Length: 133
Image (cartoon, helix red, strand yellow):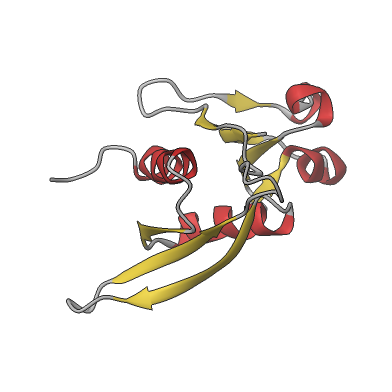
């Protein structure tokens, strides 16, 4: 069955794996998902990730989740903001801080996928993909 919103599916897989405290989660591969995972890794929300091949010559992303010393997930919540039926865009001057600076927004801009902080620094706006905190 085809997935209507692959990014929302990725966020849901991460959220579900976090709830049951899995060490890894497997996500179908796409370059856009890889760019988002790179951001999450740079910001310290996930551990390692790697591209693996399945037996059917398809690629999947193996994502390592990060936990604190008392076994709580580093990711408190991850959610999709812009949806297929309701796209959300921010102009460069309207990009605010997520959770008073304790979280981050993932924004797809003309200069690539970046955090809200980087979008403000580079003075660009774009579509708000999701929020992580």
